[in-house]
Length: 343
Image 1 (cartoon, one colour):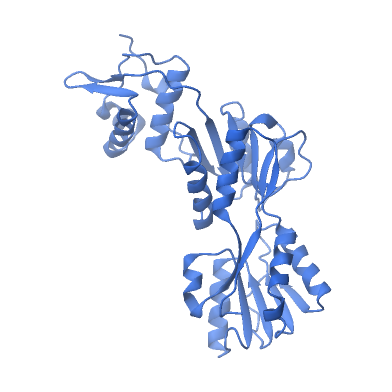
Image 2 (image 1 turned 90 degrees about the horizontal axis):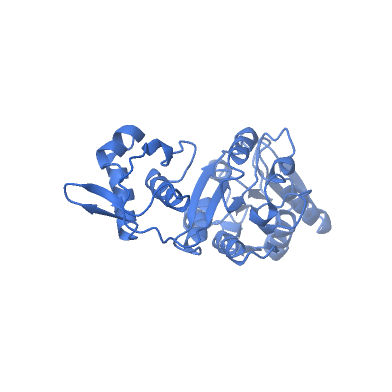
């Protein structure tokens, strides 16, 4: 039996948001696929994994337990763990690059994972809207995966993201959530249409909005939100002759009766609600509130908050289909409106 240095084939990436037990599983899979590990080869003990890779025993045991359940490894009392099966078939190795962690991104992630084959290896990386970190992660890993699924939202993009993304083989690329112009070649994309979606949603609410004389969009200045949202807002207000304002900071603004607000962030929604309550303005009568992105709580707080939102589950489903079908299509997932008492 050969003895291998476990650091030569088990890699735990601290930058990855993939749970460490899944990284352990993925490392064993890839080592088998590359021929580093063969049938009956011994594996390190739980104690050795914990010590050399700085993993908790629970993490190491969870990874091995899943591998045993899949029939990939087996254990013999007194002898330890060994490779039991190397017939893995063709595996997808997917790099997910998400701009941030949120309840909505979790919906996309869960939906994406559930609609892929069980044997897919998925590594999730979060770059926190930072273009330098995005660039580093993508360039470091541009040859490592069969597919790259990318959500491209940045607050500090000093370079053109398409220059970096264009270095990825387009047969492997799925762009998700936001369309990036100037990408070359044919590739898959599943998007929101931020400009048209907001415009269409406001048109759907026109009757409710008609009781307000001014519409206000709260759009944080240092934000990853696409500018197309502002374009769609202005297009609607100009077409239907609403007075309007784009606000970058809500804290120092006086809330006036007769205004309806569109808030993009949860923080601004809270600030607006507090200001309305303090000013004794009836929400849904004297002022209106529309919140971006549906969450379960919004149907409960303040007797119901009106929301406009894309279908995040569909974003995940369609991204998984793009990976599996290998068809280079551009698909837009539309918004939907939840009218409630805040408008």
